[in-house]
Length: 294
Image (cartoon, rainbow, N blue to C red):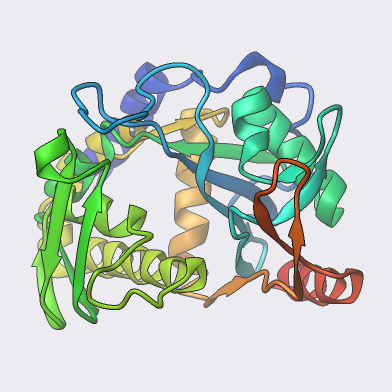
């Protein structure tokens, strides 16, 4: 156990410091995890793999946020709030757009600023999931056990376009790193074309729970040194090694609270003709109240 802690802190120190400079002016405050409540914004982007052949697929330059989740842990609090990427908001300095555009406009800092303006929730820290290294973290765990319905999806155009094709049968399946990443990113499921971003958020919650279960299992205990070494490399964050370790401890102590979704109350047509989702003030107020209450 002591070796795992040392490996975690050393790895976090080596891989830390990758959040964009603009985030420093926005982030801060909050408690000291695991003793005080801390709000952490977890982001994933929609950047394509470098060898994709998908028409129009971007492999460099600004990318939009693919997943947006607020987490509140520490000080006896435990809450998660997922914000659908198509939610329409006023992005400071950029006008009314879908919230995922904030990441392309100004990185994690602009996204944190937008969320603070939209919901009134202070963002203390940011974690950006590295899609390049996330599969290695899952593999370090020996895979995770996922329970869910049938999924057939083609990420970044599928195998034929340099992407990844995922096929999972309904029921319980042990999935590896590449499968877990593809599952988390799946938006269009050929097994159930009627699925929405709300379904996707539910799948991501199941993956998070599966990861937690694996870490706390006998298999996870044996593999803990490998997990501790790989975890920081899968995350880009403003948190130092000890702070990240404290937050990780807080999430374990906090259990597995349900990931609540900021549910839309209507739709809006944007100036460019695109359709987005809107959330009225009362729905936002209730969501924020539940989140802060932990």
